[in-house]
Length: 136
Length: 368
Image (cartoon, rainbow over the protein chains, first blue to last red):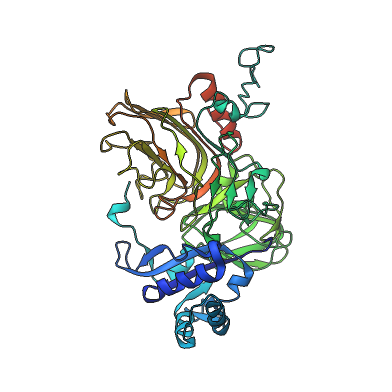
């Protein structure tokens, strides 16, 4: 575990639960509680996405897509589509049957880049959502 | 270094300059409950939460941070992406010995750019301007900053201006993100302001006391959102015998440090520092007693708030201690923690002076 890679990972709310279950299942304890940061198009919500940002194991990063922001185009370019088949096989090994199309749809929807989370949010016009119940 | 009371009495050096033999461990010598978390002690850090793989180099995540108080209240973070990072890096540039054109992500605020050589650097994006060799203070917006290099630019350094005021070398060689000068640069745990946090693996039983000292050496890097530095319990609003320390609590134009606690009744108002805009490196001390209610906040050893508002009765509770986020879930702290001491007893007099100076020396803060 001496080499880590940084990723900011943002998943739409519709895929959040699936992404969380896959991370926990495939990565074990180090993959629990992923995508726990609530995001929305305004700071007051509603919640449209979930996010994780930080250092993860390279083998885990290798399963996921990798995107890169193209400043000239003002859009992300997908450098790596991720490993949908490997994820399906990994889930099967855990006794979970997942349609390949479902995982492919998840990987298509998630945005994964080696960039600071602040930059990722700005480029995707997203904000962290803080609810009143969280206020000190 | 001053001697507190004298040799031969079994006492320890006061260590008023932050050096010497003083150790905050003395704060726990009588069995006081709490924790001391020391980012300058690599031997206390592990990359994983189970303590299998030690932290051996900068820019590694910290999944387990040992408590140096002797109470065994170690901090953990099982989730890889939510672990703070052990870092000594302050220069945000890469390949700095002979700089080439590059883009870096910067926050809004003041940065200091310094370099040598006959060439020039032209900034675009988050700041603009063309600079020759020397030291320059620039103001950036948040975003991508492109440094276009013309000619020979050597020993280039771009860091937040606050990091030029911490007694560290003016130039930090950075070859890659993990290969850079470390000597003279203060080690800290970097909390990303998104999902980084740690918590004690088990509840910390503070129920024998209604007194609490929280002492943090930290740098607050953003006032954009509320950040929890430390909180005893999942949410102090609903748990008796709990507290929090926030940096900031009031966002935007105030950016203040704050703290509040709950005894047996709904909390009264928080105690707060004055306006302290990010980025700000401070030694923050909060001294609390539930009954009689006395709460004090000190910033860089100067008292900034005092309150006697009742918080009810009872002692502090048997709760998990969270660092960096509320309940490992919300209100993420965006900044660096150099030292954190949580002690279930009031600290005052020479003990407090020594502890604050110890923390200040490891936070790059000069106390008055």
